[in-house]
Length: 209
Image 1 (cartoon, helix red, strand yellow):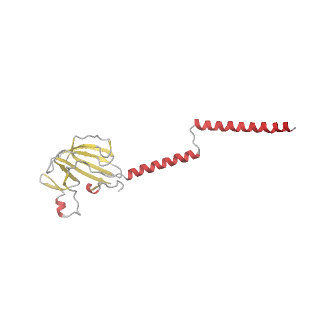
Image 2: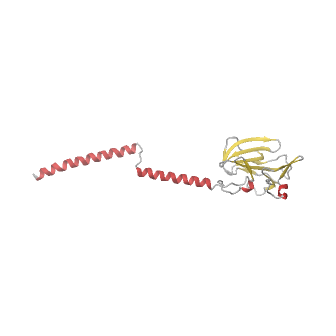
């Protein structure tokens, strides 16, 4: 009697165990085939995604604005005109074309030799045109509503719609018809939200500022 009772108890238990194991195996195979993730995996992926987004945001925030050239021979010929400057600086910030004096809306850089003109930030080329007085002009749009304009350049190396990286060579310094001491020039302007700002005041600043 004891032996028969043992068999009656063991066989149903084994059957339930096999059935449960089979169902679990089917579930695992289904998860693998459907690329399903358990909650712990989903949480891990979300954590990685959040960390990646944080790193990308930090990278953008710590981007700084560089000068539009790297050649140490380049110097300022005409400063940015500001009403708050002293009279002496204002006089140094007037540009002359023929017999007309005008407040300088940017910085006029010059050198005894040709120099590369580079992008001060990542951006997209909005326009390229030629002006009778200022020569070739490149306009680039950046983040934070910043637009930079590179005037008096030659051998333009980009075209409209191009995406440029900070430090990319846009062109070479060139001539214009302003009254200059030197022939190799770059007239550089910066707009933020449509307002002109002094380029010399933003170099090496965090782009978020």
